[in-house]
Amino acid sequence: MATHLDLEEQEQLDQLKAFWARWGNLISSIVAALALAYLGWIGWHWWQRDQASKAAAMYDEVERVARTGDTTLTDRIFADLKGRYPGTTFAAQAGLLAAKVAADKGQGDAVRA
Image 1 (cartoon, rainbow, N blue to C red):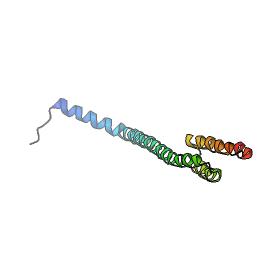
Image 2 (cartoon, helix red, strand yellow):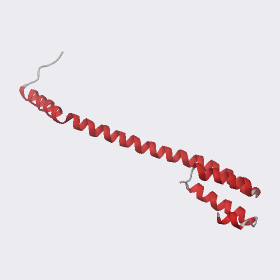
Image 3 (spheres, rainbow, N blue to C red):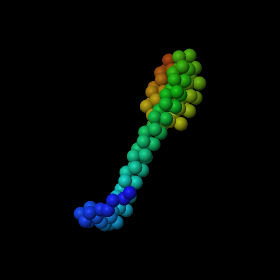
């Protein structure tokens, strides 16, 4: 059964209600904004990891084809990797690998490109 509050407790409860009536919307808005910012940060990092893992898989394919020495297929896969994931370090590494394969075959123009 509910107990009656004494005068001091009732006064504290009234102060809390007045505080929440004045600042409740601001506090709730700040907490919601922080939660959205945190979720955005988590989402951005998830997206970056996803892009990096896909680029890594394509880089493995470039590396596998580069071992065979097929410049045409290496260039094609590198162009696909560069088109889909240009901001990853795998794109830069694949470019160096494709240039090495082209240099080994004596294709100077392809190396400069």
